[in-house]
Length: 399
Image (cartoon, rainbow, N blue to C red; front, side):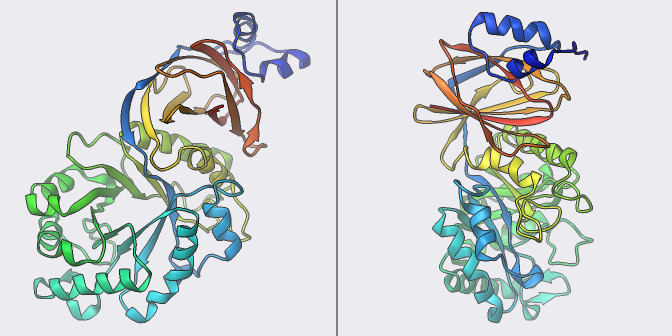
């Protein structure tokens, strides 16, 4: 890709959105890249989005503060996370530690999902759940959900296929056997089997147990070591419930934040309905130890604030231009477009929008030096174009 040197005045102009053909010609004359039209078909509905979120596990790293909860879950002043993931402790004496953040997340409208890393030691044989303890384990999970005021869904195992983990393991058949026997007794809808690396064969084996499948609200897993992919027609929605890109790099590292932006795009393009980061507050996460929203957090906000639970993904050209990645969503008459521009230059991107009528957009963009910067613009007709800031994430919300 090559670029032409632009004068100061033209550069200022080129960062504006363009709707008319004259502006489009000026933009294309000064920004040279391999491009194609991003065609959005609002009438072609795909998956229903459940949200974007992260985990808080107070018995490991301490609870979130009130300020951090607001920064995580507020869709007006924070990241706008709509999912909180928590741990089911092995001791009932630790259940209460989860409740303050759970209650706060719920007050912002977030869904709470809970995962058990281990059953109580008395119910396990080494790192395996005893079949004779199935009923007792289900009662333990149910007691937890009651203690915290209820959760949206519960997972009986965390990465049961990861033998090096040091926590409770199981084959897909064993997880399915437990859910088939006790899935109605765990106090919340079941999400499972939550495998490491989103292993397709693990999902397939689990779902081959018809009783377990019927008792499973949705399937979930983690993408460590895997690239997001479509699991096929498995009859359940897919949630990505844990990942981080690099635990040794600051959440303010822009290159790493852009990696996460592309990863979220890939998960949505794969047909999944949720994306959940690992720890909410961690130096490499969306909020740092000093309670600041990081660059990673602002990148997540480009999705989480504006693509709310219940929005549906709609058909869109996923990679219309070299280095540009697009997903689109709608709720009623509102259309939301999220664009990741990996190019290190201003990049012009044309769009067509069919099946919806839009007269303008509110634009929000994040770059290495800007956070959710707003710049509304108008459009005329079903075709329009925009100039994307170099290395940026842009969200367009129809007015």
